[in-house]
Structure formats: C-alpha cells, structure tokens
Image (cartoon, rainbow, N blue to C red):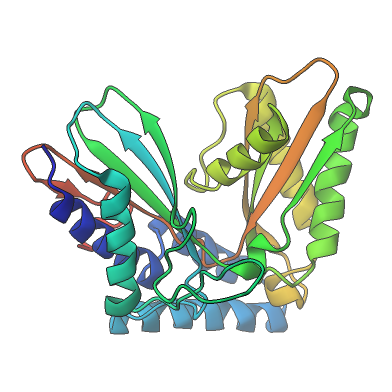
Length: 292
C-alpha cells in the first residue's frame, strides 16, 4: 500500500514544482516566441516574462502571485492507497503554508476565505482508474485571470465546423489581453455541456507541440492555432506575433441534435506537475526531472 503520508508529501512537492518552475515545453515555447518576435514592445514583454521565470526558479518562489485553485487529475493504477482524497487535501493545506501558496478558495456567496486552499469540492480531484502499476497525479494550479475568460456554447449541428471556428474567434477577441497572453487554448468539442468543459481543461494537460492522434482534430488544431495567432493581440495584449503558445482539442461523441463546444484558457504561466508513486515508494516527476 502507498501510505497516505507519502502521498501528502508528494503533493507538497508537486505544488512547489508547479508554481516555481514551468514545464520545459512551456518555457521553450516562450523562448521561441521571444526569438522570433521583431517588434520591440512585445519582445520586451516576453523578455520580462523569461526573466520572471528565471528569478522564480532561482529563488524557489511562485512565478505568479495568483497560485490558483488546485485541480488534480489522478490516474489510480493497480496499487492500494488509503484515503487518497484526504491525503491530497492535507498536502494542499501544507503547501499553502510551506511553498507558500496564496489562499484563494472562498465561499462563493459569503466570500469567506477557507485560508488553506481547501473547502467544499476543493481541491477538485478527478480520478480515473487505470491498469498501470503506479499512482499518477497531475496538478494544475489554475489562476482566475485566464479561467475567467473561458467560455462554453451549445451550438447547433447545422453550425458545424464554421460555428466552432467562429466561437473560438469570438472567445479570443473577447478575452483580449485579460488572460495574460501569450495563452494556451484548451478546447472541448462534443459530449454534453459538462463533458465539453471538462475535456477542454484536460486538453491543457497535453504538452505543447503534441497533436491529437485523430487527423481531422489535429488539422483543426493547426488551422485554429495559426489563424488565431494572426489576430495580433500579442504578449500582455500589447500586440505582436505570438498570442497563442498552443491550442489543443479533445473531443467526445455527442447527441445527434447538439454540438457542445467549450474553451478553457490558460495564461503563459501554464503551471502543471505530474508525479508517479510506485508501490516500493519510488517517486518520479516526469514534468520536472531533477526538480524534487
């Protein structure tokens, strides 16, 4: 059995990794954007972002003051665990004080702060059973600036691919510079209203540069990524070549009479960390090798 105490310790380290050091695919995309930008204003913004990333890593302090709410995606392999949900919650509470994380979770009506990033349904934990011989956990600290710009629409089947493209364009134009671009777009197509929103967030977990295995979906990802980058919103909304660092789509089959589409937006600080805990106590951090 994987002890609860180990899971708790790993959650603390995952959150420390996530909020102080970006995954290589995200940092590399920002470096490429800076190298290819020709306008002085957006180039300066990208240089400031890269400097911020370096300082946060050196000092082991959060990249952004908004350390988000903690969303977990857990793959429960063929291993025994105790009270997994409680252990993750304790890890989040500890990380709030030890990393530290800004206490962000509040009651939606009274706005009373829970003070340790826990609360009703927080941290939010998605659990999927798998046959792998380990427990895999991925955390996505999700800030409000980008999350607030996310959108969902129930299109009609007759609107089809044209409607999906228009929805993506309208969402990006409405967001403008508010979600701290350059951004990453996760899009969920199909399923039902709630499923489309869920898989849009799941799409943000895919490393930048990896395309969907379905060739039709991959082609749409490429087309939308290139087209939306032509809008010119640019870093921090100040214009430039790079508005999007990436765009990923996940899909689900849906009812013949509906076409749900959701977009979840992630800012340039696309924080995520994955950990794998093996039954013998070994722990790997695939997104942050050497970062534990």
